[in-house]
Structure formats: structure tokens, C-alpha cells
Length: 147
Image (cartoon, rainbow, N blue to C red):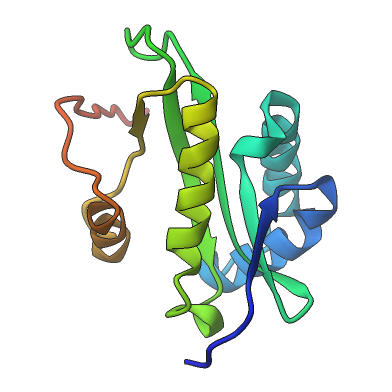
């Protein structure tokens, strides 16, 4: 791990290519259509609630989220974090924490008093990350039915 200067900023439409490239490294699949749709959605909803981390002239991390109400019977404005990605070469530089701090501040400014996310039990690293940020298990429980 090398220490680098990182800048956290709001998501922009020009980030689609860098995020697609980073996702390909993380997920092992090239999915430009997925990221074009997702990023377009978040930019239309509220671009300040989604962030990217830049270092060495490229996007090295991102966090997408928004504030919604009426989801799953939760009427109060609630921040939702959908996805987080950090380039493995830049981990250890508190990029995830800094992205989360910016997103959480944006949620707070929009009136959210609760923030939620979903984490697969098998993704222990992500679970540990959110726990370190002060997240705890919730009473909401996901259910799934395969078709």
C-alpha cells in the first residue's frame, strides 16, 4: 500500500468510463450498460449523494446512494447506500471511509436520520467496513424467491 493524495467529489456523468473499468477489475465483468443506467439514475435523483474518489488522475473509488421515503413501509426520509467500490491498489488510504463521510453528510443535509444498506453475509469485508462506520444489524430482513 502506498499513501496517495485523494480527492472526494460529487459523481459526474464523465465518471461512467472510469467506474466501468474499476467495476471490471472488482467484479470480473465488463458492464458498461449497467453503469450507464445506474449513474444516470443517481445523477437525475441527486448527484450530491453519490461520490467518487480521485487519485493519480483517475477514479479509484465510488459510492452511490440516495435519500428516499416510502420504501418498505419506512415513511421517514432514509439514506440508502447501494454500491461501494474501491480500487484494490488504493485500499488502505481510508477511501471508503471518506466516501461514506461525504455521502452521510449529504444524506443528513437532505433530512435523513437513518441510513440503510444491504450486505451479503458472505461479503465479510464489506460487513466489517459498515460495522466500523457504526452501522448495526437491522430488524428488516430480506426475503428472496427464485423464479
